[in-house]
Length: 120
Length: 111
Figure 1 (spheres, chains in turn blue, purple):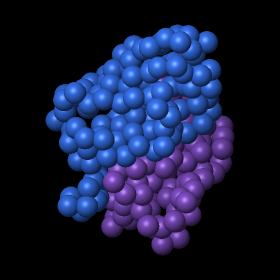
Figure 2: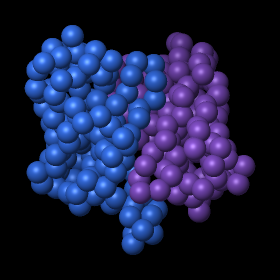
Figure 3: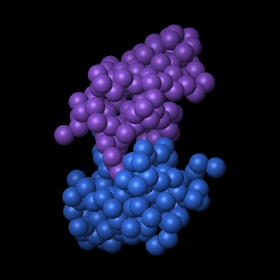
Figure 4: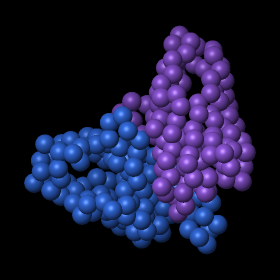
């Protein structure tokens, strides 16, 4: 089973709302990722969690707040978003984070179906 | 800064043709390269991963090659089918699982 699930599929929110995106995997993967994809553009990395700890933050604005409560679950908390934050938000996971002690080789990243976010 | 480019941006072929998608990257210091397909409005499906020490990977009708020194990878699709219609993305791993994606090739295979 190589499935990553994301909820909700679609989300519409106002600029003053607080909402959360959820991502789940049961493959025993120890690295999880958030990507943002604007229309007709490739995905861009936002955050990486390695062994449930935030290891990479690609200078993402603080209105996006990630959380990794356990090794299977990844959340993205949203607050005071702007209309330009409207995009497809993709979650991914991989067996290992590709850290220096692991030879940095890296593994296949498996993606979820995404959450289509619209900010009004 | 790593930049990844894919050529062509769009490709339209009749069913049954063999085709080649190209991916080039500016910095050869990569750990691996991964090919994905993406259907409209959907997530990404992993097709193949090539480690930096490898030259080639095959899965069914797909064959991907990697020439790290020249900064190039190709994805060969044999006997294309309408179900292959999608956007194909390559992504290079620059370390710590940071993927930098290419600009994508939109493929349409007509019956």
